[in-house]
Amino acid sequence: MDSKAEFRKKFLTLRRDIVDRTIKDKAVLDKLLVLSKFKNAKKIFCYVNTGGEVDTKGIFEYCIGNKIEIWMPVILNNGNMCGVKAEKTVDIKYFSPTTCLFIDKNKYLEFDMIITPLVAVDIQKNRLGRGGGYYDKFLSKLSVPFTSIGLAYDEQVSSEYLPAEAHDMPLDIIITPTKVIK
Image (cartoon, rainbow, N blue to C red):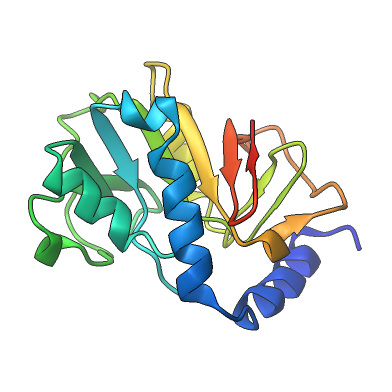
């Protein structure tokens, strides 16, 4: 297996068949909440889960309840991504497409942490997304250092190296129900 499309198909099938999601989602959240990088973050950008991804509702609830600024993605018609700030849990939803609400011309906000969705990840922390390139483009435009974290089920961690291109941005940390890979 060597193409991104083949890996994506394989891991989307694996992800679809994952059982005990509620228990696994809680284990991932518990591991995230005790990370010092998370505890020290003041501004976080986090995906809103869809299509079998690790549930992020608990992250939003924790951040909003503890006055940590948290933003969610907006996918634009032009293939770019930006975001909106979540003020309360009823705000949490998948946005697409709409106008960009936080970009002021070419100025991007600065985040301490970006929590990214993924289809699969390997032990080198190469992330395979859904194929739109939204996160790679978005991350490449951020100029201030940040920590990128991928949330995954153990079944999504590939023992094979995933194909990576020059524009693909590897993750800093991967969290699964059973481990934290730094």
